[in-house]
Image 1: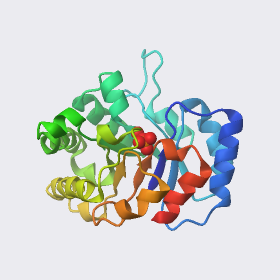
Image 2: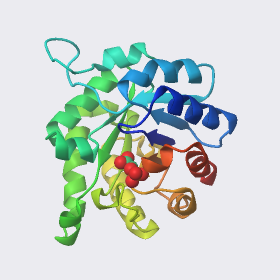
Image 3: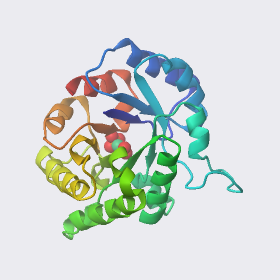
Image 4: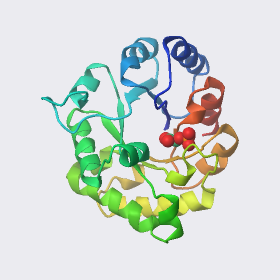
Amino acid sequence: LVAGNWKMHGSHSANAELLSGILAARPFACDVAVCVPFPYLSEAAVALAGSDVRWGAQDCSAHDKGAYTGEVSAAMLAEFGCRYVIVGHSERRAMHGETDQLVADKAKAVLARGLTPIVCVGETLGQREQGTAQATVKRQLSAVIHALGHCVGEMVVAYEPVWAIGTGVTATPEQAQEMHALIRAQLQAATAHADAMQILYGGSMKPDNAASLLAQQDIDGGLIGGAALKAADFVGICRAT
Ligand code: PGA
């Protein structure tokens, strides 16, 4: 799975150009998705309907409905044909104070509406330097595994080392594979479906470094930020699979 995380980028004209560029490059040998800002979901749905390119959102509420001003529920996202919802992105954990428990609750809310959560985990540079990277990721993942119970196998996990996001510094394929193998082992302890689950790498993945990352045994795709905003780059990564 190669999923674009557009973050807070886009406009009607830029979206039309990007989506038509992606559609023109089909077929792909992998699952492809774009996670767009909420206001652009309907135009993504119109542009991508009938194609095998999927769409989704970048966050949602842990609640189904109610007095939560500014929030968007998984039920609403389902009405727009979303397949995926990113939850627990490090930018939301850092800037919006999202806790492991809240991220787990969001993942559960997404699954409850029949959508697939892309659950982001990953350590900061400080945590890596202190030697707590593995413990951090394990803790983040444990909260979600606990909340999802027998549905664990239905989520997508994205390992995104915070120090690699938007920095141009990518984890080496070996560093990424080491963490992905630990994530796989943790999933294996929780579900019989772990081997079939998609574990994505995210953090400065580009067309020129994608192949070496994706060649690793436990890297099953990418969550792409900056390089998802240009059709040629995004398509380049899809082709690298
Ligand atoms: P990046 O972002 O590809 O720009 O590093 C990835 C992400 O934040 O999902």
